[in-house]
Image 1 (cartoon, rainbow, N blue to C red):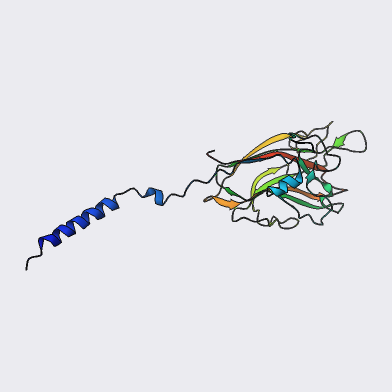
Image 2 (tube, rainbow, N blue to C red; image 1 turned 45 degrees about the vertical axis):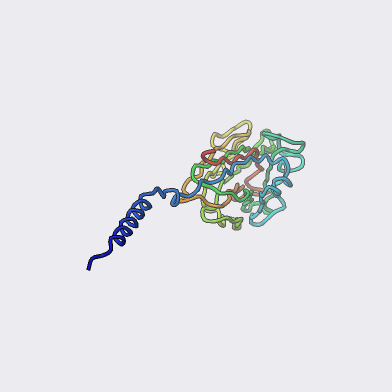
Length: 244
């Protein structure tokens, strides 16, 4: 029995349609859309305004002291700001009073707002240390250290406690991890900078764009009123999304 000619024509037409659709470029269906621009600049002219923009402050020192991240690092400010856009101190800072011990573990966190991070993004900021009179004839910073970290897994503000870093397991930058002291009369090459200094860090190691946060950790072991640490300031933090 012969198959009807119309059936053959319908089959050929369907086959042609399948071939046409199978050859269409559907690359756009498998490529993730670009990450919207996450760029921002934080001047820390006031703590209140920074909190309103999503910044969080967690003092996870052990034992915890009275020192918190505050305008100018104290009252009066520890030093002049790098960039001041208002009437206040114009930067944010923390000091050795982050721990109540004479020699404790300072772990005081300044955590960014939630943003979508991806490889190639940059974090740019300025920081410097506080020089104190050493009681004799010079000044010293008593050894300060700052870590720049991020959570490589999820959006969290878990900052751990003491030596623990909580969810912020990825270290992006470590300034003066050996707690080298520096002074006016005896400046040390690898110590914490005593003048406002620019740092530029690139985000790497992510497998895909991630909703997360980065954080500054003022971290000093054996720090306190009779140990390491004086105080530091942070100013003009810029997050630059790659491609923008």
